[in-house]
Amino acid sequence: MCILPRVPEWWIINLACIRQKVVLLPGTTQLQEKDILLRLGASKADCVIADLETAHKVDNIGIDGQVKAKILIGGTKEGWLSWDQLFQSADEIHTPIKTQKDEIMQIFFTSGTVGSPKMVPHTHTSYGYCHFVTGKYWLDLTKDDVHWNISDSGWAKSAWSSLFGPFSQGCTLFVHGMPRFAPLEILQTLTNYPITTLCAPPTLYRSLLQEDLKKYKMNTLRHCVSAGEPLNEEVIYSWEEALGIVIKEGYGQTESTLLCGTFKKMNKWVKPGSIGKPAPGYDVRIVNNMGQEVARGEQGNIGVKIKPNKPPGLFAGYIDDPEATSHSFIGDYYLTGDRAVQDEDGYLWFQSRTDDLIISSGYRIGPFEVESALLEHPAVEESAVVSSPDMDRGQVVKAFIVLSRTHKQIMGIVEEEEALISQLQEHVKNTTAPYKYPRKIEFVESLPKTVSGKIRRKVLRDKENMH
Image (cartoon, rainbow, N blue to C red; front, side):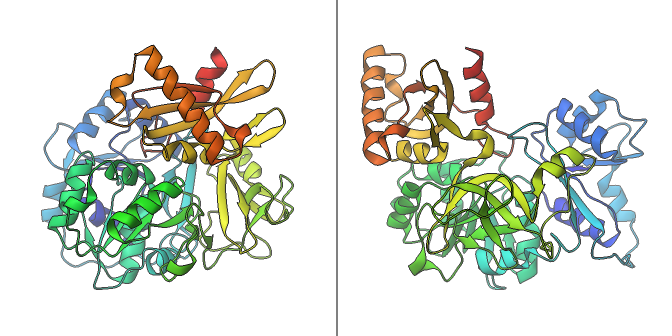
């Protein structure tokens, strides 16, 4: 298990493990003691490589009986081997171990937006080879590019866009060690360094758009992509207006490589708000719960066809979790757990996680459309929409909203909050189907998120169900 911030050793360790037939389990430094204990217990990992802060957490949970070796990067600690000393004493002559294409190379834990994190195995083929498509067609990388992926080193997204995708195209990686990504520092970095391609989550693009982008001369930047959560249409238009660059959205999971995307040559055919079209190597369709394809324009599950041949970039099943695996593979399809609509042109439109779907008075409402409508209002910086119990309708739509800087001063002032709630409700009615408007709105300082930055709607939904 390797738990490190963005330091050069992370890349060395990734490549060393691949060449030495060692299975690597990446982890984020944001993991707490209980998270580390859960992951070590589930994986039976027998070696931990960590930074000093994580090493203290590991020692506090007492796993010496299981772990045979503990290696520390950046400092010294009793009971831990020094990476620097090991590295300096290593023999310069190295012979890689031959590996088979279907052998497990890395194991990732899902981010736990729904339920406990699950172990996802990837092989030398599924991630090591199949991210060629990610690097070439979505990230649009060449050997002349300098690519910056704003992602924690502990998640599959880092493997996608900080390792296998860029390395497959021979480009230069830009790495910044800032502990937390701050909008002003990011904009200054894009101004000061010759970064040509940027990969970032939607939450970051939204925070960058709170600043005056025209103050910064990001002259070398030519291509931007987004993944992790759906990107709101308003963000795409605002970014293009400020920089002249259309953000290309991508969709995939820890369990797969890129499943859908808006690819590099699709500028004239971008449909803002869509997650694009199926990626090369995948047959992606919208199916019902029985794994049968539904009509175009009808909402259903995002399914990946696995018969007669499973796509090589897709995982084979969760480790030690046959129940979760059986729920994911239905008939001829792997079901991603997300719902979407495919239009007549073949573009896919994300609706919600299956668990996030709201059914109110018989209407099926996906939170993303309501969140996107809210985001178009200048008072809203971020929002999360969930179901809230209701005696008459079964469920109603509730929005938790983080206000923009210009509106934060009204928090706690009842009259102004009530006026803004009415304004936001009318705005949603005028922007999307009126029945989707949030009948309840609560202003909050922040939204609960996983350590990978995804909004945890389940936490908010559980809070509502307790009332």
